[in-house]
Image (cartoon, rainbow, N blue to C red; front, side, top):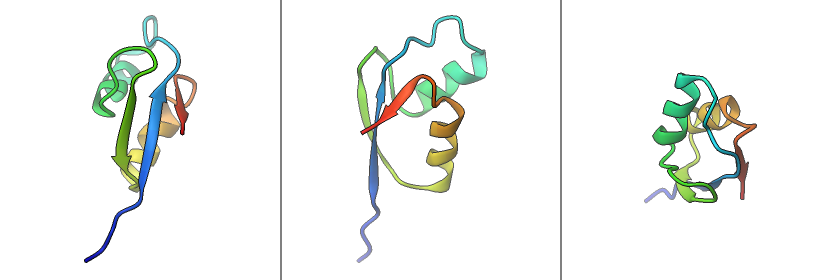
Length: 60
């Protein structure tokens, strides 16, 4: 049984006024409201999404 490491991401800036693709990435990470936190599996795809919107989120 393998255990995947996880990463917690918090939305710290509003996606209003950002590119449509960045807003879609925020939703794809499971973040809705400001300061909402989502716990995700630590995969290269998730890391890429976090990197794309790094100015909107904080990794906990």
